Length: 305
Image (cartoon, rainbow, N blue to C red; front, side):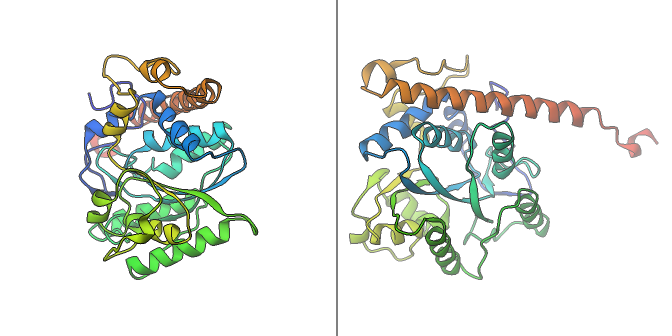
């Protein structure tokens, strides 16, 4: 079974808004609610405190990782400026009517988060969804419209990176600065190119500005502004590093496991984060099951003829 816990956080292999192949095992590994502890730990290393501003660049490719990040942000009371590339790789938030923006809307409706995506782009090749059908691009546009999310779209990848730079500058209050840039996955407007995504060390990077890149994404722009960059791409390695690997037998219990006995986490903060994440997953489960029951009851009039 692709989605062993029926969370609704694992999508289909293909859809109109699927831009690339994705590993099902990566999506399944991210279903552990204790994954939020990874972000708690990394944020703590950077000495982030309540009220600190961070810039965030994500895609729809691994919604469970996005949820873990949001749980940590909420628990630590950080102030995020978020830009999302809405399209998705296989098994991510790639249902046309259930994109990452739609998942965010559910979390907001149930008051699980009080923040979300400020701007969105198509994502995919050149951050312009090159290769998707006209229908796919239309469905991405519709997702942005129904969730009232302004679109960032230029004529080239370079223009999209420039638009993101301007958007992040607009979103930070005057007199404040970003304490961290968080990149999840390999969105090209964030990393610049696919080779960059693989070559940039995962974890906290403080010297990216010293390295030459043929193509630059917004993380290089942030690095030149002395903003540390947290780059997370291969979630299974992170899950193994922090002992929060998932299994297909049962969903792990929040706040329990090797990660909490071996490491000196702030247990109170981590527990709050995990509780928020688990509640969010439950809400998504409920809505996903409701949608599936609704769709199952729809009768195609052509089939009755």
